[in-house]
Length: 326
Image (cartoon, rainbow, N blue to C red; front, side, top):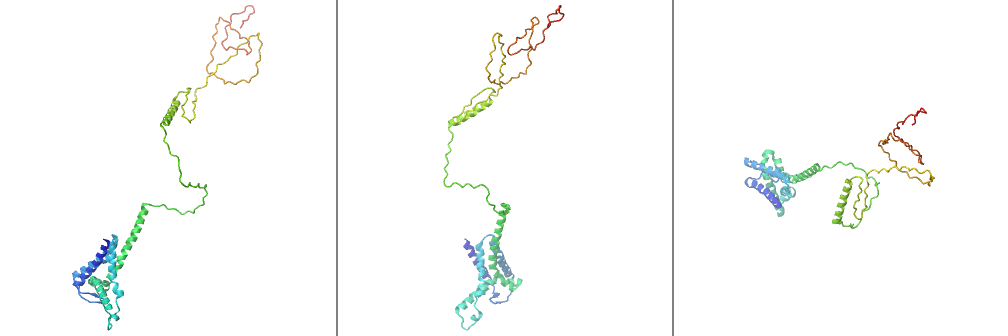
């Protein structure tokens, strides 16, 4: 289909030029101009032909990326340069016995020149003979110029859009510093085989659940109670620590020894220090009956015991001595 674009454009340009040759005599011939009058219809058709094939079609084909249309225009534009470069010299044609090949070549090149200049002949009354004769030489440059311009434009447009969509931060070039860190550990070469991961068995799952439940119950237990946590095989057994205060030991008072028995001095042993318990309650006062006289405590080896109770009331007054006994 793309080759059809090339063929249709090339043959369409030739067919359009032959239409001007068939219905009107030539105005531009090789090396000269044959003056004549142009009708209004011929002027309009020449203007449309020049605008469409010289200015519009090369740009439109390049804009729509129809490269084969531009190639067809370029191939047609090359034909106008053939008479200019390959036409035989006039001296050869005017000789007494010119060769048949030279004469045939001259006839073909004259026909190509007159055919390609015919569509632009009517424009000579608008822009002049020289400008009208030079329009056909613009087909080849414009057919190659617009595809190149469009390709460059699309390239920079895509680069601009890609930069706008993905902006890159401006990084200042920094000199590569020497490696001063720790030595890089070399990677392991070859295939690394790791142990397969085995899922936990149901017994292990149940054991872990029971251990977590026992820990939760021991944390919620009352202080002073001692509980033992169930541990799985391979795990250390945790002991519960009682948080209750130590119980005070009863106060031991030395018993009085009989006087007849001699005191035996015990062997000196290092006395163990016992923690002293301080009672914060008030001492109870002893109840003493007024009818019973107070009994003085006996002297013992441990010492004298002093009662902190209230003093008893006096039993009477000695009339003889004149003083009272306490």
